[in-house]
Length: 133
Image (cartoon, rainbow, N blue to C red; front, side, top):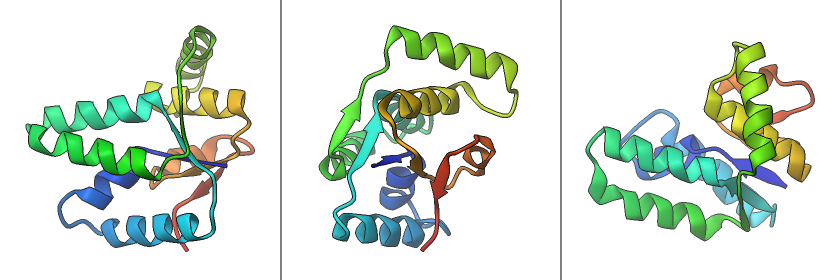
């Protein structure tokens, strides 16, 4: 099971970027291998936040749709997740609040891999980041 971070669909659907082709190849490979791809509610919120912040509201539905089409599941964020994420964000200044939420949801659901171009995830013990073929 692999959690897909928000930067994957954003690069996939967005304008030209060095990671655009990488995101597409990685996603196609994992889908063809029938890997179980999941995400969490925070990823969807990040997409909404990003596209409203850059005033690209017309793209929101497409990015959300593309994201949900390839996901086998979307995990919710529980009260205990928020409390644990707060601990991580307070005590480990290496992680953003959003990354802390992903880490906690992954731990709760037994997910050990994340597909992301965010190298900060490399700092979390036992977590494998998938970012290249």
